[in-house]
Amino acid sequence: MEVNPLSIILVKSDSKGDRLLFRYPYNVPQQFQASVLPARKTPYSIVNSADDILQNAPPTVSNICFDQLYGISDEVLATLFAVKSELCNQKFELKVNDVRFVSHPTLVKLDGDDQKSSSYFRINVVFALHAQASYSVVKCYYELSKRIGVALLYEEKRAGYLSNEMKMMVSCMDEVAAAAQEHDHGTTSGPCGNVFDTILRDCTLAQFIKTIYQDLSTTGLLNVTLNQSVTLSFCLPQKAHQFHKKGVVIEPETIDRCLHALKPYHGMLLLVDPSELLDCVPPSGARMLLQLIEAYNPLKSLQNMASDADLMIDHVYQLVGHLVYWAKATIIYPLCETNVYVIAPDAQLNIHSNLSEKFSTKFPGMSLFEVISDFSLPTSIGHLTTPLQHPARQGRLAQMVLWMLQHHLLMQLHTYVQFIASYDEEDCVPIQNGNHDHMKDDHDERQPITNHGSGGCSLPATTSQPLAVPAHRKHSLSEDLFPDSLTLATSHTRPSSASHRSNISHSSVGQTASSTDNDESIASMDDDDKIKRLLGAFPECDRKAISKIPAATNPEDLALMARLWQAGYFKGEHHLEEIMYFENLRRSQLLQLVDKFRDVLIIYETEDPAIASLYTVPQ
Image (cartoon, rainbow, N blue to C red):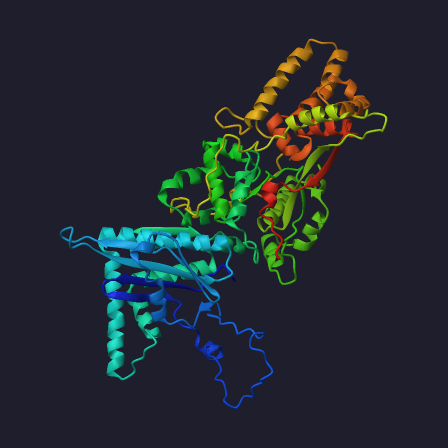
């Protein structure tokens, strides 16, 4: 797999020379060593003189054996990565055959008694990766190498930790080399495996590197402590998200696009038990995250959770963003009866998947394939329930839907509205060039509202910093949040409170204010004048199509239609839930309006781009 590291190499360079201190893993398994040794060419092979050397490409050389670095000696590695001082504190990248090496060399200063006695040495923590690793993967490993260098530099200044560990590693190598010479088993190929075994047993820095390699290869999440002082926390999202979606690599840029599209009406769904969040934190953010966990409920929007947790909406955005980045949560729309779901395009429902067994264990007596078959076509939760059902059965259905959302088996579809007027040939008068340009300019002035949810909210770039949660509180909150009597919420959301930012763009605010002024001036007119003035907001062709609709004779319906049309909501870019939130409307009002103007308004169902970006079809 391109995401996993092939090896981690530690190289030092100082006045005494260049040396590879440690690398992990350092041995190819014994049962595989024979299979990777090059076959000896026999002198009796037949040479075909007709072969053209220029047309026959030379055999490719590989330095990867069973996802480990192979075939490059320790002396060569030490020479390659013992960089000069001019190359320190910046990105170092080197490609050798099918291996790409990336690191951030660090220059360390040893302070003496006076200025003249100060000395320097260079330390380089190098990650060996597949050469075809994506740019984002290489960038993440470079960031990790930089953080390791910063941690080592801090511990060196605080307690001389790095110097002591280097002396111990060099001493182990010298002892083993001396013992090998005494027993006449010297070798010129560099330190052998038992040297690194001794170093790994005696040196905490070597154990630190081994832990990093193992955690990156298994979960992609790091939470290790250096010298019992500095905690290094890091997330490799390309690996971490595969725990929930095997075989699918989600890039950090995809997560960033999702988080920048967050709006207050979105919700959050935890992918792990809340107690697991306590393992990846510094104490600084523990209080806010604990408040959010206490208020967490998949039936609530982010704004409602912010209100219940007494947090600013911006802080909730940041907390949710980190949880999504660390593969601890995903973005949903709060669960309610009107939500429409369909089987996700990347749902792991093959015969080799173990999700069916997990589902049966979680919900005894239920079959995953039987339950999910109800969502073969887009289906709302309300369609699967009846008023006569016991609330406990509705709560059980809600739990099963949440479980399928956690395992990315379902995707929610939203209803979008598009304004398309049907024209007759005699309705539209041929437009001259001048008038056409004028109408084109008028049309260009009406731009759709964008960035409703992030206007005024600057979500910082996602980083792999951990979140803080106190070390106590180990009980599970799943039963508290989703009891058997759980009932589904309705689609109504609480009105925006003054303490939370509304996230409506300034253009939308201006349009709303002008629309309010127009409504006040129109209220003093009679019905015919109101209708005439409201129709004047539409272009001529659209005006004629709308005037033929019976609902256009109702000033209230036409006023709502004109207001939403002028705000840009009928261009297929805003779903009903977004219009409901920002315009403070009920779903029934919107559906009635769409039905009354169905001759010019069409609806269709598709996924929310902010959420659909996390649903990637495996290649």
